[in-house]
Image (cartoon, rainbow, N blue to C red):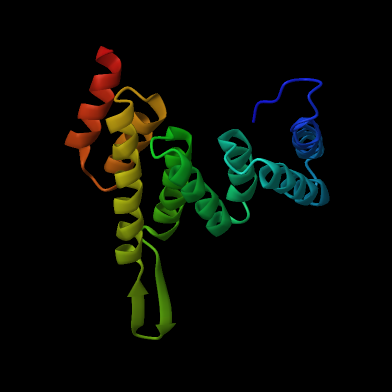
Length: 174
């Protein structure tokens, strides 16, 4: 949002959204459960005043990611609806599903004495989602360091060392 100082058009909204953002950042620095909750509330108020502000939305998504991954996913998708090539949002989505992949990989639950249920199929669904997000990033920015290294590690986790080598080799060459 751009406004000309002194015109009165949009000035109060600009001040408020910046104030909300600054309050959010101050609360993030305190790093307590209550301050993180306040930070999320303040950043949401800033977004209400400027819904297309990707910077604010990325901050909210990162605040949500650790404890509220489903909400963070929703926010990252909102960002991608504004900017389909936003690599930060794609990285956030990849991080979330990658975390789920590693959590479920080689997991099983014993329900009764002889009934064991494996969660590897669920893990592989997350693998394919993370792979898709990382590949989208690499289409946009083929030398994105995080996407290349994270995808290489993901491939190593499923014993696809050839793909892993290709990605890491591309980084080393460039």
